[in-house]
Amino acid sequence: MSEKRRHPRRVVRLAVAFQVGDGPRIDAFSRDLSIGGMFIVTDKPAPFNATVNLYMQLPGVKHEVTVKATVRWMEPDGMGVQFGLMGARETHALTQLLTGAPLSIR
Image 1 (cartoon, one colour):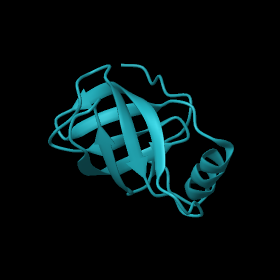
Image 2: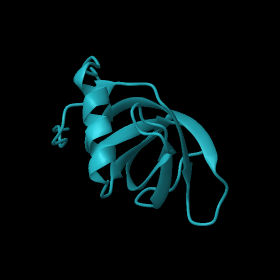
Image 3: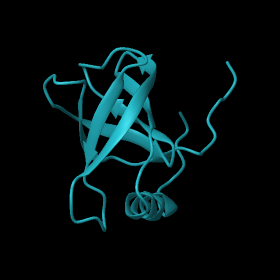
């Protein structure tokens, strides 16, 4: 299987929550993160290709960040999501967070 990612993943554990449509908000955490998406560890993944609302608190951002994301792959311990559009402040905070994080080997 060839690597399809455009951005390197970093090991970053963040508390996150996600929601599909009007469904319940599910608490989880990230295993790794890139500027383009993250892997979310959860035993209640959203369906493949589903659009989810993703909620997270990024360092340097006073409010909870909400991002639309699409489920792009599934594993037994969770799901990988690709971020939709983010604001400049959120993108900057995410970039700053990723600057010092170690590369993921997964």
